[in-house]
Image 1: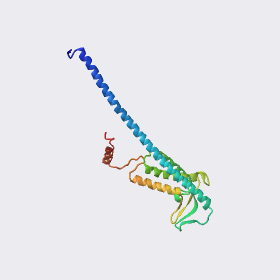
Image 2: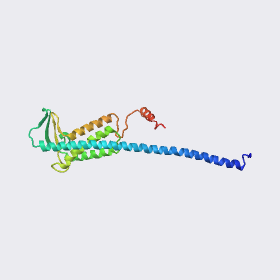
Image 3: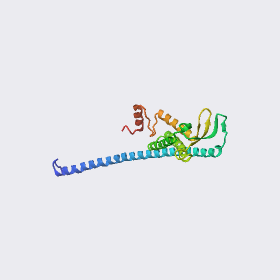
Length: 229
């Protein structure tokens, strides 16, 4: 039967067609939104896994430094503290002799023991705060060296004589024309040098780089095929 444009049959046929088209558009759009949300969640999850791994590296490095430093101090105190003559390691250039240091690294500032104890505690807090956004492996190693060294010397400050917070650090590595230090001091110096080098290269603890040209950043994002969309 032929119907006119104003007939009921034509209007009834038009309604389902438009409803079906709208439904198709809704159903086709919904999976795209879900895919977008799922992609963001997967990316966040991947970054969380990377951060946990970097923190694990930091803690492992710090623990190794701390245990090596603590073990070396226990050994030299038990075996070398009562010796009057130093033990030669490399002729007269490097010797082993126990010295109780009330100051900072390399014997500086012996009258400020409590202050250096507070500084070491502050350094540990700062390192832990940085670790909350840590995604760089070199930074994890550098911060682990600093954390282990800070904990090693802080342990001496807290538990060695003459009193709590005023304890003297055990130093035993003597280099000719230099100073007497310990392995914790060495770890702190190495970690500090690595931090300076990473900062000089523009590396940040969160894995980004600062000072890079905008064009290079945009090109890198384009290669990933994500940020330009």
